[in-house]
Image (cartoon, rainbow, N blue to C red; front, side, top):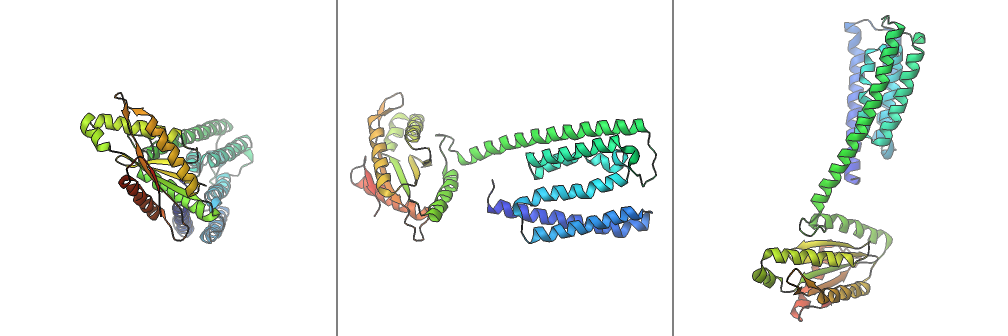
Length: 345
């Protein structure tokens, strides 16, 4: 979704994760010496990691690089993990078993690009650590054979690559599911047009664009004339077919930038970006004539529509006020005989 609310949520989540990391590193530094002997190099590496994370925390808290927070978080985690991994045995270190989880984590909190970059870094590191394993100092004093190191390096590399593919597959499925849910949440199940929720989303976007660019924005509210008689005489299933056909007819004859939604019952609403009221009135007349010349359903029913037109007035105007003005114009059109276009005052 990206929007300001989601960006702020990601920012706060990143801060909480960094705070948890700081507490974990500080606790480890303070408590580890009480239970086990630790190399000075390991202690120094942990202290350096703590300093890096604290520095990054203040960068994130100042909101200096909001777009790069997640990517840098992943890279800094690598800066902390890989040196520790190297001085604790490379591919033979117990830390290495957690590496295959990292591409999946990068995919979940970052995305495909982040996961690919992390995977490449890990694969390159694992190959180098395997080939030059004899040069890596194992501060745990564990002795591993060359064959064992090669075997672990091979399977570790394979698992990292597999995890990257799994992360990509999960992201793709998640994107498909999210798209489907968004469509279901913003789509009218009968006509396939936008519903009220979808309309509100796009209407808000167009209002902001109009305000920022001082471009015109118009609205057309449409009501199918005497629709109740269709339902009473032919049944609601025929009425539904008529709504579907009218909705699709209107949509086919609009510009790509125009937005149409089912407003409720037998009403439709159209948002026309970069269109003033006079231009919107011409579009409304065209749509009115188009509907009146067609017949609908298997009964070839002749139907008409009445349309109310208004535009964005800039001075503290909003979606609700525009809709109310169009609605008043629409009802004026009904009072004046229907099958007509009325402009708001």
